[in-house]
Length: 242
Image (cartoon, rainbow, N blue to C red; front, side):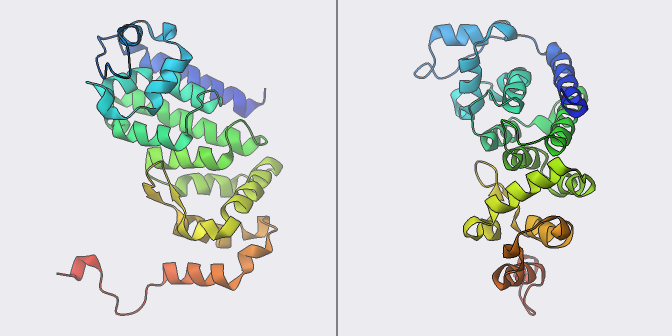
């Protein structure tokens, strides 16, 4: 195991420790989708909840639970560890969206700090190793939507000049340039984060010398980038539209 992978495992263990204060509580919710035995299991010790039930809760809509934020908060260490290690079998974008719906940034500082440490360690590990069980695009999408910011993670990528980071970069470029997806790229299960302008600008400026892909020089992309960063003169913005 590499140093960065070990740091990620350490961050996940610290996440477990930070959330150990979340005590079991009587879980109630949709009895059409979840039987009494499921609700009883969710109300018991965290370590005894089955992986299948954790995955079900991770993907379920909040309205299925009487206290969704508390339930999701309590299951967060199990959900995140399974997501990071590619064992959750739930769309990574959905995990980010559910965390936001659970209001994770409003939780106690010890909990949010532990999650931030996981995001950082996961991203460093992704950039220092080859493609893992979770693609670099899905990892970037999850942490971007969860934190509400893309640029800090791109800046880390810019500063990480390793063969693994460049290989991951090539994979991302090939993915987002297919049918020019990057010109309308949104992240999150519900397309919450518009990543198109930031990501395209970063590819054309910050890391262009590291990408051997002639598609980045095509007039269509260059024109799209110019149009998105230089609005037409005289355009009325919403702030002055009244």
